[in-house]
Length: 258
Length: 258
DNA sequence: CTTTAAAGGTATGGCCTTGTACCATTGGAA
DNA sequence: TTCCAATGGTACAAGGCCATACCTTTAAAG
Image 1 (cartoon, rainbow over the protein chains, first blue to last red):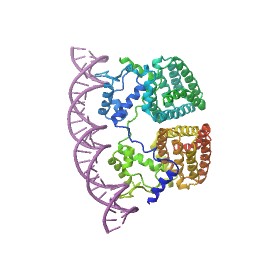
Image 2 (cartoon, rainbow over the protein chains, first blue to last red):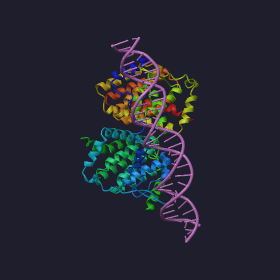
Image 3 (cartoon, each protein chain N blue to C red):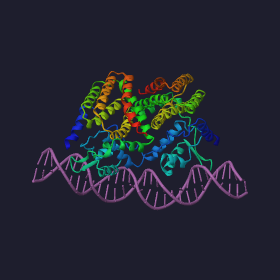
Image 4 (cartoon, each protein chain N blue to C red):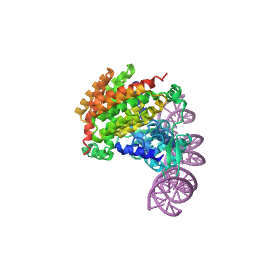
């Protein structure tokens, strides 16, 4: 009876895998509910789903959808309020409004802040970039294969146009919206949800870098190529397009792995 | 101030997306800690990471790695014990041993059980299959691109050989091990972890279907092609190989979407 | 045969989270 | 002006989850 247990360990060692359970035995929950809730709300903001000046959904609705109690949600909102991320107003037509981020030393420090955050992320940067690539290439291909029809196609075209017409300040937000829409059109809610999480992390890093008009134009040309491939139902081309589109960003961020 | 909130909702409606927050506003936690813990332990078993007759890691280690208290872990183990999944023995060299699943009506019922489970899964079947495809194609390509070296290559070859030599009873377990190894060699722990979760679900469905020797041989030929592509560093071929390999299973399961 | 190390089993007190109900504020609608 | 509905603010009791410490059992080692 014992031999079984022993033999499987031995087999794992022979096979050279130090930890056969690594993929499953990860923390059931990352921190307490309150911390995870803060992250979720920050995701809404970092993804630009709730633009600066807009308000979050009402507490009761947020609590419902996140499946947590209003008390816990409020603790999270309190923290974000104290941090100057939100402004909460009472009464009808009140709510939690997204404030403009304080002019941090981030963009001005010429990459110092980015280096700090990348180092803080450690090994997880590579994981993040690879995971993002897998999700985003997969989503682009799936999306193209189901060749969005009328309303969906219109939506993609509209998002593409809006992104193309965006100012420097709005660009990241609208770019995120376009990519997220593609992830959603993949047909897999899991792909969309995972992408949202990973993209929020990426945006957090990218916000440390000033965006230059040439980059923006280049990026938009790739968007056009990408959307064209998708609407043509050309999976491989959509995939290749997306790959090229991601390469620049990934190389930039990897450059800070000292 | 209010107009912003109103306008963004209007924009979302115009764009045709009913729920702009869908990708982020999902439950922070799916059920209580105890339920999620049961799932994790079941994953270890369904993936075959702990074969029938072997024992789970000690309670203290499991609790540590899942970042939960031993008390909660024990509640989960208790349930699995009562369900006849585990046998717990005290004393040194004791532990929680995986019992052979009771000869359920599953395999014998000619697909009735599978149909039931597929319907129970509902919309999430399509999500599961698409998500699996995205992860697995991405992992195969990443894995090939980094072209596993000596020890890693040996491991892949060994897993391939063991899978090829497997009996009908062992096949699913060893097949899972091979695929999971590829996911891990992608270099992204997130890819591996998500794959583990999704594969556990898929295995749960597949266990309702009797495996036939011809299928097994066909599958093994595809494994050889896949591993060859990976070890040759041929990303696109690895990807294509994996795609073909998955197609059969996916079509089979989709067939039960009545 | 005794010892001992590794495993499961138990008990307690405290913090986290929830569900529920109710209060307070606000700006538009009647 | 008055009312009302939507929104944030507060209180309390019950249950979940945790850290910690200690007890019990078992089989190999000496």
